[in-house]
Structures are given as C-alpha cells and as structure tokens.
Image (tube, rainbow, N blue to C red):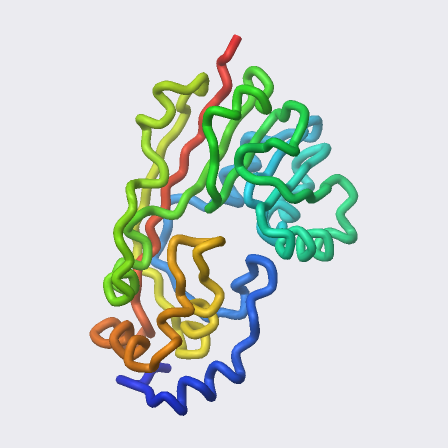
Length: 250
C-alpha cells in the first residue's frame, strides 16, 4: 500500500531494508500490468529450432536467455557491464549450451555468424547485423519506448528521446522487416517497497532513467507519487516496441 506522502526518515528506513538488484532480476517487485499484446518469451521460440546458434545482445544477468536455452543448440550472451556477465555466469552454472562474454552492441569481440540474434532493452547497431547474421536468419528486438514511465520522467525532468525503434531504421539495412509492433499500457507497482527497489535499480547504463535521483530527497519521491496512486497502487506506464527482421543479404 501507499501513503499520500513520506518523510525523509521513512524513506531512509525503506532504503535500509531494500535489497539491491542482482543482474536484471526484478522478481522481488509486486506489480500488475494491463494485458499486453505480446510476450517476448512466447514470441522468440517461434523463430528458434534445435540446430540454431543464437546471440543475445544486452543479456543482463542472462535471466531470459537462460529460459530460452532449451529451444536452440548453442548460445552466446553479451553485455557491456562486467558485473552483469558475472551474474549471468553464476545464473547459468547448470546450463551447458550458453556462454557469456563482455562486449558492446558493436560486437567487436564477437566472431562468427548466428541463425538468430536477440536484443531486449539494450543498445543495438543494425549496421553490424550483416556481418553476424546468417542469410535467412532473424533479428528479434524488443526496446523500451521513449514514453516509458512518462510521469516519473516529467518529475525528474528527463528529456524525451527519439524513438528507440522505428520502421524507417530497417529501410536502409539489409534486413527485411517481418513484423513491427508497439504497446503502451498501465504498469502498476503495488507497494512502496517495490517502487523504491525499482527506482534504486534503474541507472543510465542499463536504462534511460536514473531512478536513484528520485530517492535522493523525499520531496522528489512525494512528487512522483502525488496524483499517481489509487487502490491498485502506483500507476505509471510501460511503453514497448518489438521488431522482427530477416537477413536477405544474398
């Protein structure tokens, strides 16, 4: 539940009891979503088979890539953050067909070509796909939209960025766009502990929002909460894009 406002002492007490994010795991949060038109973990397996080699760009702690591992032969997960790679390796101790390495979206340390390349909520370079995606292979990407968490961004005076993903981006690439989708739905955080955990976990390396700034002073947190709480909890929004493209370079 939420109060209408909090004191600095109350905020500090909540922070003292709030666990740190491990990898990209938000399972400690109590949340509720409006129905979404797709589920990433249901879409991706449709484009995988048991013979595939798969690359996951921005794998985080490997949480979702590990869940997908039963659908392909061999996988490589990369992330710019060495701490994420450390967590991913710990999470995948019992998974034999995935390795994890530190690299950026430019893939300068990643060799070879893949049947499928995945990217979920991470920077990407369409121009490098032709060097790493087999002919006929698929690039599947889900990105956080520029309107995501809009009411929080307004309080933090976050400037709105350009769309992370557009149809036009694919026009000059060697990738044929198979599908392009978008949704923007209510995202409800059920209690103050979950909200604080979430904000504390968001930083500019892993998202487009420095959530820690919302927790530096209780006045900022109270501004975020004001007018955005009802019987369900704290209401913000989840804005996402999904694109599926196929390499037709030959």
